[in-house]
Image (cartoon, rainbow, N blue to C red; front, side, top):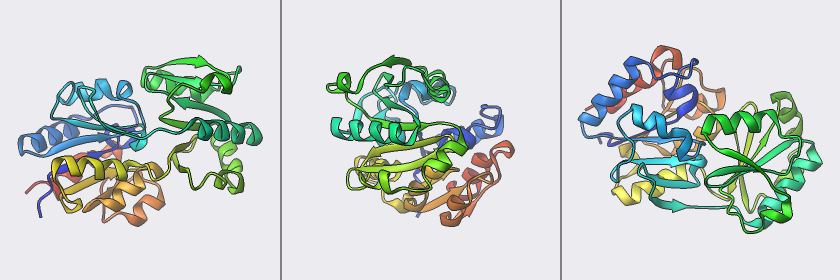
Length: 271
């Protein structure tokens, strides 16, 4: 069965280590579009953090093109209309924020249009994330978060600090029936609503487009890509992917500095 949808992660997958889309990758995506394939960016970022990339690929502001954002919590058209949304509850936020305090981790919550932190000493990685996704940061106490929708939450800190914090998952696992955790980078440990990830988002989009998993190819490199690579008919790990992603992938392409996305498209997505 031919591939009709190509799901692509952004960082260290679509973008190389210089945070650029290489000419070869841009050309391959253009050829895939010309061949009638849907190219769907699947990212932990909000739409604001993917907007320029979508423009560069000729996918922005369209009612018939789609993007998966916030690690799967939101599926929307690139024009911004929501198809699916799953948020954390206020109780989830409060409990996650408590875990951050207990573990000594910096923490922020993702709203639809900004980041919220209860850390008066704003973490370096919260500021980095705000710059990366073009969102402002607001300080809010946990009590002030009661009526603010939280799309996902993030423990953000130095990799070794995150490593130490998640050696013992017992505190995190107290929320296992309400929250899904993913390690999206060495310095991000993310929390979405239970069962929400990039695979669940692609399932929602597949219903809209009347596609089966066999008609989907997914390409990624990190822990938050693992579920969609397992779900897709053809799951592709980047050459620079973590071992866990390579272990579940059907195919392994070259790394992000050697046109891995382009090679995957030509090898496994074109009829």
